[in-house]
Image (cartoon, rainbow, N blue to C red; front, side, top):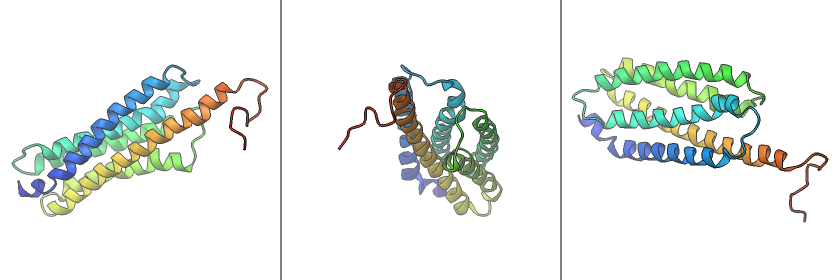
Length: 186
């Protein structure tokens, strides 16, 4: 199918990146698991698990677009299923974000709720227009895949940075030590 052939390099790159980042996320979580913060499971369900889901969705979309379909329709049906499932999952994540001991800020809501919901929502209209606007539908799926990859990268970095620079710093400071203890002084 010529429409999909033009996207080969894009999905090879994005899919490979998503797969590698899934593995890297597991390595990082394993390394920081030695000293889990209080309520780590609750925060993980709201912040860490969705990151893996977004990487997996980018990997799945990349694999679907590299499959040897005779027409775009079977892939488009799967786009819609992934889109609807992703939007539903994002709503669950939004509820979980409100239930953690951490109070999410604007950036958290943007990268854990708004952008993922919009990303998955882009897949649904792509299904409906794939027959008449195949090129535009493929660009929509490409934008979704890339956006999910960038969201995952941001969220993975943000989670690790929070754990390292906030949680471990708090834990390493014993009672009675001030905020600047342990930091280099000039």
